[in-house]
Image 1: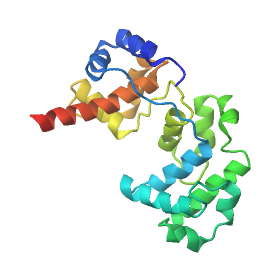
Image 2: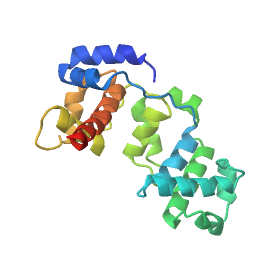
Image 3: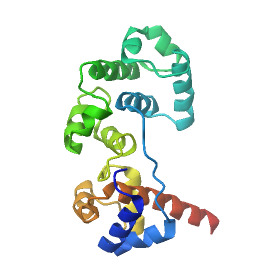
Image 4: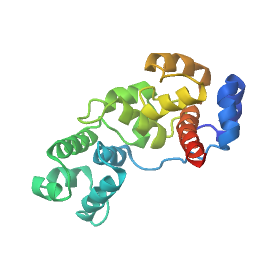
Length: 211
């Protein structure tokens, strides 16, 4: 992430005492900086779509094994046969999406870290959602965990909305528009705020299991 996490934690606590209470409970933010390429991050995200994490990890392992235990270059992926990819456990729709990631990486739509560094968050999202199988949520995850953008709030994310509901004592999850408006007070550290909302859900669940 861009800002020093401790600075973000202090600023969020001043701007929002309720979130500050979660920060005190949960402790320091341990969100790690991402270092991979956008291309690789999108391939991994597509493999993980709509299946359990363990199953996705197994498929990803078989996929990497095709290329010497690494992710393929865009050219290698495009040249791979449907049968090879199907044998890894990749459905036809995921194969199509992954090939589109490769093609749009080659034509510059996806871009590498250096190219995307010059663009605003929304401009990057606009680019990425043109890729088959990539929606706004996937693009936002890439911004947060691959490009280390500091001010991202994925308002459609179930976990973030659930964390907000629990922390602020609501009866139901907030609508995305309401959460977006409320979250403006967390700028320019909305990525850190999102991390705390995710972790707060885990905290409540663990506390409930212990009671």
